[in-house]
Image (cartoon, rainbow over all chains, first blue to last red; front, side):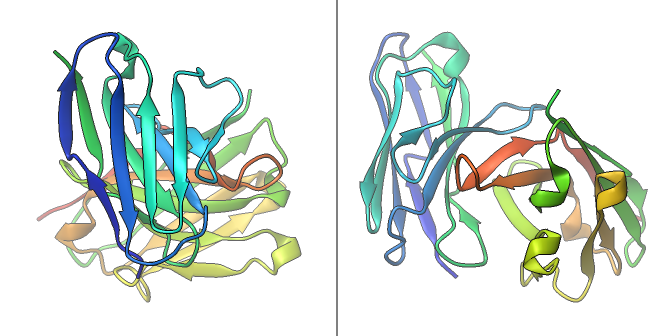
Length: 107
Length: 122
């Protein structure tokens, strides 16, 4: 199975801060990497697909980059509604696997 | 409205069975692959399995942790997918989400249900 390692596991930042999360795959997954936002009691939401493509309707403060095994997710200016947990997910091979998640809170 | 709605969760004893449903609306269900993803309390998201469309021979695949115990099926006439779970273990306790794998616009889980809670306990 492809292991996805996210870091940090949690972080606290202020409104307006730039936030960066990294995701490392245990093998080359090309750009087959997606990012999701999940709030407790809610359905997860797709933000970024294929490594760097912003889903239609998702605010432009969210972005993704990377290829191969190393990927980065960035929020350029943190907003209060961005709290929750972020997950990376690979689909280069079955089983589909997720990173362990990054819990983001506001200072 | 584009949505997925899960139902059928509840409390079941270890070794018991449960069948979850996932009802779709607002999109072409028959053309879509449906996956199940679960989240145990305090844990991250875990892929459970998937069923592809008729065009892809209704192919199924499962995580090793559930293979042989869980079965995914679908009824396109009812726009509903199912997750049949047998020989349930305490470690299967989780919120179960059904989700669509979108391929026309994005290769990703682009539609999610709100989830249904499954508790395996004596």
